[in-house]
Each structure stands twice: as C-alpha cells, then as structure tokens.
Picture 1 (cartoon, rainbow, N blue to C red):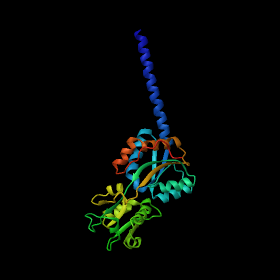
Picture 2 (picture 1 turned 90 degrees about the vertical axis):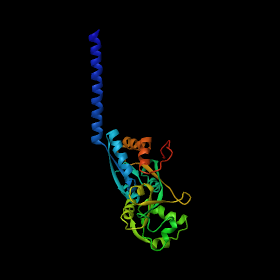
Picture 3 (picture 1 turned 180 degrees about the vertical axis):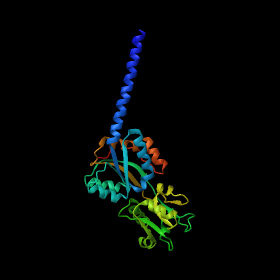
Picture 4 (picture 1 turned 90 degrees about the horizontal axis):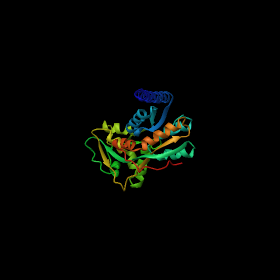
Length: 267
C-alpha cells in the first residue's frame, strides 16, 4: 500500500513538473515570437511605459511603444504601419482612424484634464485663461495640427471668449508634443503653456493652475485594437489590462482620471 501511494505521489509530482515545463515552453515561445507595437501619444509615456512593463511581466509578450503626436501616429497607420494598438491622447484621432476603416474596436482608457502650467513661482501671476492674452506673457502651445492638446487649447479660447489674436501675439514657442511644453516651462524659456494635468505633474518646480470645470474641456484618451494587428489575442489582453483595476490604478498614480469601466468595446 505504501509503495502504491508513493508511486501515485511520484506520478503526481511528475505531472506537475511536466505541466510547468509545458507552460514555460509556451511562454518562452510566445515571448520570443510575439511583440506588440503600440502607437501612443507622447503625453501618455510615463503611465504607458509602466503598463507595458506590467503586461510583459504577466504575459511574457513584449510591447514596443512608439511615442509621438497623435496626428503623426495616425499618418503612420494610414500608410500601412503594422501596428497592433493605437492610444492617442484624444478620441478625435480614433474617430478619424475609424472612418478610414483602420480600427477593429476601441475603449476609453483615461480622461485627460487640461491645466495652465506656469513657470516656477508664477512670476506673471497667471490665474485664468484670459491672462494668457496679457501683454508680456511668453506663451507656449502645441501645434493644433499634430497634438490633441493643441487642438483643445484653441477650443478653450473659443469657449471662454479669449481673443485668439491677442493670445497668438504672445506665442513664442510651438511644440509638436505636450512634453516639450512642460520642459520649456520648467526651464523658464516660456511663462505658461496649456498642458495635460499629468504632464504638469511630471515637471518639478512648476505650478499647475487649474481651469474651472465649467470653463474646461476634457478629453477621453482611448485605446484601440487596429485591424492591422497580427497578434489579436495579445492586443486585446493588453487592452483588458489597461482597463482592469491594476491598470487603472497605474493611470491614476500618474495623475490621470479614469472613466467608469465600459462593459463592451465600441464596434
């Protein structure tokens, strides 16, 4: 009887070892063969870098991230880039990609809140959007043709009846991406810029001046699985991680607001 139990125990032990070996071999094979390409808005870099590392640690699938302005990334997708995922800073670019038949499905991953980022000590005492039109303010804005925050900055001026001509007279620096604006303010090359709140949080010694909710315009930051994806299951798994509580916690840690979890992808 003792020998039978021993043999059964040995067989069970060998079965566990075999299962572990099979899993390890599968994970190694997946890890070596699969690499997701995520085309991502530059302003999302800190959080997305952490999410990519977390996904690789859990799945063994590596994630290569190309950070750039939303319009430039969309241009790459349109000319045939073999991307798996698209995560711009604004759903505007997702809608354009959908019209071109480039998106399989999309979900809202985070909510981006614009703020006014000012130089250390706020020497120009900028408190409102209208202050950006005052004489002597050195202003930085993102190019509305390339970055979501640039397009929304224009909408903010229109919504709050801030004279665009006066604002543009103060424009001394125009960037392609939002992190460039944060760096320019931190180095005191400019007095103020309109950036996302998480971008502002990433630059020490600067001050983020909030825009009142009734004056502000928020942006949904979606994540989409592209029709060009060659690793559909892994691409969807990455989306699920982003939308899971651990993924949303990473986004909140980096200063993003998170939406109510959506139950189904948008077709």
